[in-house]
Length: 252
Ligand code: SF4
Image 1 (cartoon, rainbow, N blue to C red):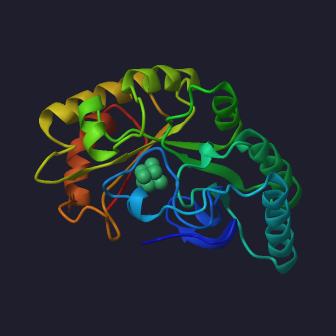
Image 2 (cartoon, rainbow, N blue to C red):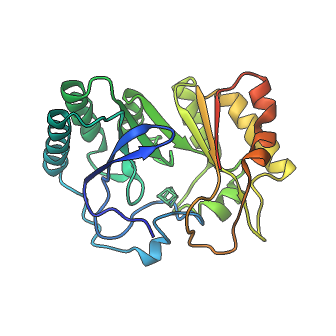
């Protein structure tokens, strides 16, 4: 399984974000997330229990400054500073402060680079998290299915999760975010069944994200019963949205 033991890693090449410097705000030992997605590249939460120690704000700042200043000195290209790593980045208690520091360092060393955050959007009901996500260039926010029941099967949220609340909060972005959706199926569910697809398309039309990234399984997954979709199949799923002019990236 894919886990990161450094706070700042890379840059690694990403088809969507270019040369991407990764930031892992989660504990370096193990995985920490309030979802437990059947496809998570970091594995199941139960297999990744670590020390639950988040990196200190000062350590994040020092690691970022060191990497960015070195990359700038050496002429290394950085297109995006990207928050992902071993779980859900907005769970870091100082997430909003980290974003402010990152934006300041980005402006100093790589003013052309974007700041991107990959998040499951569960904590956007918190004002500090929402405001921070609104300050970054690319808030890349996940909705994999159109009902709480299906989300329960795919994302396995910890605690209470209500899709209607997340959608309500996402409306505040007024389309200024990137929606990320995984298409997959198993003997138990299919995120592209006619009913699931219809509900998902309704959510998209309600939120009107400026960009949509749809993708499917790429690496090893904790649930071994999953099947992926082809690019051609996913193209068919989103065709009604493409026809309406939505900006959609499809990654097989
Ligand atoms: S939200 Fe992301 S980090 Fe969390 S379980 Fe799902 S894929 Fe893994």
